[in-house]
Image (cartoon, rainbow, N blue to C red; front, top):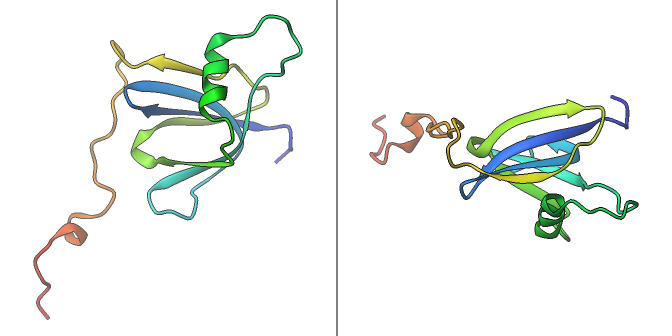
Length: 115
């Protein structure tokens, strides 16, 4: 994979859809979580700043690695060019979280197993 490729990660957090760009995405070491590292934001070379991207940048300031629950992930795309990171309200959208448990029902059964 060429080093110029980055990932666009879309996920739901507290009723909002986040769109961020990262250089590394993996299943991570925590069960049920996706790990994103090296978040990428636009350069400050221009005079005009995007307030939406600045909001995302300030929220993730100082974050080395972030773990996202699998059920909050909407989409992960490998892209050639970075776009603008943003946060969009989920209201009026047709996006819904998948309501499935991460463990099979037999693993969640509190009754002792008979041998």
